[in-house]
Length: 298
Image 1 (cartoon, rainbow, N blue to C red):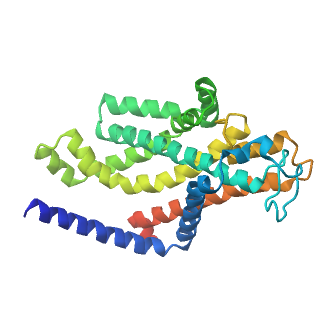
Image 2: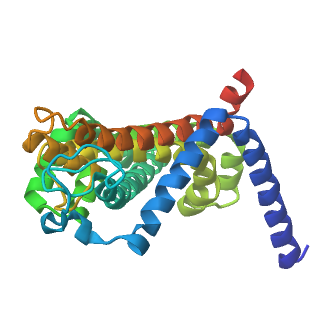
Image 3: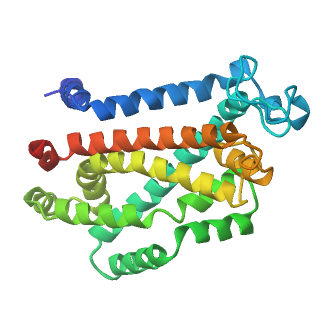
């Protein structure tokens, strides 16, 4: 069979697999609701610069009254400087989602590399990697992230690094367990007998089998990263940019609760809750679709 025919067959199989996956995923109402919410949130964050800019977060741009309640002029009310909460939430979604996605990606990549290596290499290297993983696992991730962010300085990059390098151990242990299960299968022994090296086995056999688990874990990691960023921002460790977490911190600093400005607290909190719930629903649906045992149970 020619290389072109082989490639055509491979793409045909991928299309069929994706079709089966999408058909199964659509049967999960919670997953579809979460996916729709995520699409809306991401699209709004991406198109924000087409309608507004960073000036909406400037204290000199506020034209409304202090802590004005929701109205036609300001649907979500205003803050202590008269700025529109709607515009600030819209612009702040860019920072919250960016940090959430990139921090989760960094965490997943580190966890995947460490987990596959620890499961594939059974000697001193695997044992050393697991001891390092266990050491990071017992550290309080939030406090460690705060310390790292304080040491590295306040910026979007440092917040991403601080969250990413403190949340990977759980993924590493999960991927290691899956790697051990994959490498116990007979075709791995045949691949080794035919001369397959470490790189061939881990990239051609192990990685494709752990990829579905990584996909489901990524959605949950993004939700966790967004909550962690908001928590860090509320505790005073922020990227010096407007985000949902910094808005909650500002509402606390300027006494929104005592002033009765409930919208200043509720709106950013609901945004965090909605996005986290959407990622969680998608993650659970992916887990049910990609895990044969869960699919049979359903």
